[in-house]
Image (tube, rainbow over all chains, first blue to last red; front, top):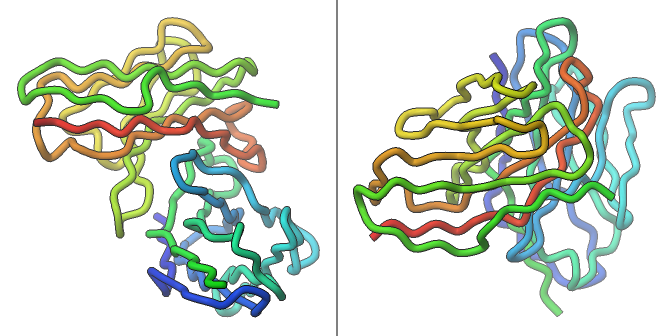
Length: 116
Length: 115
C-alpha cells in the first residue's frame, strides 16, 4: 500500500519570493509521482510527473520538482511566485508494474497563498 | 484537449433522497474515477471503472454505487443521501488500464449539499 504526506497544509508567501511545497511518500513498491494544481472552483490539472530518468522534473508555469529516492520525497519548487499561483496543490503517487490499475493516491493538499 | 464534464456544479438534496451525479468524457478513455474532496483530507477514491460495465471499489465506497453503461459516461449514485455525504465530488478519466504514466483528467467538480 502507498501513502502520501504533504507536510504543510498552508504556505503563505509574498509575490516574487521562492516557494517549496513538501511531499513525502511511503510505498513498498516503486511508484510514479505527480503534482496537480487546483485553482479556485476548478478541477485538478497536471503540473508535472516523474516516471523515470532525471530526478529533476520541469512542469508548467515555471514549477519543478525533484525526486529523492533515499528520502522518499518529491518536493515542488518555484523560484519566483505570482499572485496567479494561488491555488491548492496535490502530490500523488501510483504504483509501478503489473499491479498498477491507474489509481492515484493523493496527499492532503497544500494551499499556496501568494500575497502582494 | 480532453474534456471531462460533470452535469452539475452545485446540487442541493435532502436526506434519504437518491442522488445521481453524472460525468461524461470525450476522449475515449478506458479508465474513469469518482473522488470525494474534503478539506484536510485531500482526494479519496470512491469507485473506479476500467471498462464498460466494470467497476471496482476505491477507499470509501460505503453509501455509494456507480454505473457505466457506455464508455464515455460514469455515474455516481448515492442510494440514500445522508448529511455526511455533503462534499465536493470530482470525476476523472485516463487512457488505458496498466499505463500509469497517463495523467488523469478532471472535471470541474460538483459541490453537493445534503440538507
